[in-house]
Length: 469
Ligand code: HEC
Ligand code: HEC
Ligand code: HEC
Ligand code: HEC
Ligand code: HEC
Image (cartoon, rainbow, N blue to C red; front, top):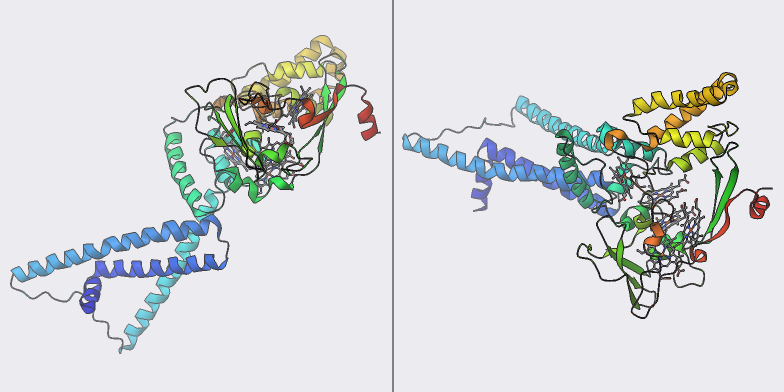
């Protein structure tokens, strides 16, 4: 019986090839799997080979075996019908002959080398497909906003795949499937512009961000100081400073903002698709008590419960599009735009928001507009400080082309940041005193819950003089 089985598997070329594929891929899968179990971190790529590529070879082999057997049967039957005896099709391998031995050994060596080469090539190819350059630049126009914003963010050195795919084979396969659809959508030009957010099937932050950051790691306070300029002739300079309570140790006296994502508490909510309007909020505290806060009746369009994670506040950790105000302030504080140019803040804001059809048009018109203003109002500056004006113009073009992408319909504020409460309601989506429990408990909106406001656009702040004598 076993002998028959073996004969059926190997009697014809097709089945023999199939059997070889099955045996080889199965051996490789098992070996790779064992290696990974022993603790060798192969990452998603090894996962792809072990769990996607090799199984495909195995499958193909499994298909070939019965195909070969049935063709062989037909051949024998056809031969029998003509009354002939089926002639053996295989060359007779006589290993006693030296040349045959050589050939067989050569064949085996060649095959092994091919497999190694093929394997490395697949590995390399997959690696390239997940590189920042590939993700960010292959579909140039489509990913340009995200790529440019990523390159200017604190995560510029974190590959796209670390947040969008993360470790493990399952999300890798999921991403490749949705990636294939995206390729089709891009080639047919049927993708939405701008790309809609939030991304509803983004991998939970627990599994991505927490590879590098974790909530209980946050303790103490974080001081944030901003320099702001007014739109008057002298661009009056002022400072804003907040001391943020970023701690995350739940159940302690002095917890703070990262308390929401502490593993000992859970905050869940239901909202509309955009997550801008939050309806019901459920809090499970350290001691297990559950509270539900509601702001009136839950509307029909409410989503399923979502467990709050990092991206509910840090929705722009990597793709940070800033508002023109913040950009100009930053450029002026760092000297990119000279702050002694009269009305430069006001004029910068005007030029940045004038509306352009493309990056090329903005690059042309912004510097021209800036020169035109100074030529008309301050001719001595236009002639005497041409170089300073030129640099300010370049800086404004850089700001525009890093935040606004007409080709993808990304304008100022298209992707608002949920950190704080300036660009969008952000924290105030829940901390609005409108959501309450049946007992009438509300979520705090007191300024001191989240931060101490040390200076709010103050020109001569005592605190700042202490910090920066
Ligand atoms: C630090 C983590 C991180 C990295 C690195 C990262 N992203 Fe994202 N990305 C996010 C998060 C979080 C969102 C979801 C924003 C939301 O849902 O509101 C997002 C959203 C997007 C979107 C949807 C549109 C948008 O602007 O929100 C695209 C497209 C995108 N990322 C592409 C990329 C590409 C391409 C790269 C690499 C050049 C990359 N991402 C790198 C975290 C990251
Ligand atoms: C591969 C590691 C890695 C991953 C994954 C990662 N980060 Fe980071 N993140 C970093 C590093 C490194 C820095 C520090 C950059 C610096 O100091 O310039 C950082 C900085 C930050 C900061 C501080 C930014 C600032 O303005 O100083 C925030 C907030 C942050 N990450 C949030 C996230 C979130 C949210 C995610 C998941 C969507 C995430 N990170 C995923 C490595 C990572
Ligand atoms: C309730 C909102 C909220 C949630 C949820 C949240 N953060 Fe933050 N996080 C903040 C705020 C606010 C700051 C400080 C302000 C800022 O960075 O602009 C901050 C700061 C940070 C920083 C910089 C801290 C420093 O000391 O420099 C990192 C890193 C960070 N968060 C990572 C994370 C990660 C990872 C998660 C998910 C496990 C997370 N955060 C969840 C609101 C949140
Ligand atoms: C999805 C709803 C939701 C969002 C969004 C949200 N919070 Fe909260 N937050 C809560 C709930 C619920 C509590 C617990 C009720 C309370 O303490 O008033 C809470 C409590 C807090 C606390 C007190 C934690 C402690 O020590 O007990 C701080 C600080 C805080 N939030 C800061 C923020 C900041 C900063 C943001 C925005 C970056 C933010 N929250 C966004 C729901 C939210
Ligand atoms: C639920 C938490 C929370 C509450 C309540 C809150 N804030 Fe804030 N606020 C933040 C966070 C987070 C930031 C920092 C945003 C950032 O990092 O850019 C911030 C930043 C600010 C800033 C600096 C703005 C800037 O230009 O960067 C001011 C001013 C401010 N808050 C005023 C207030 C006042 C006044 C109140 C009381 C009515 C208040 N906030 C209540 C979370 C809160």
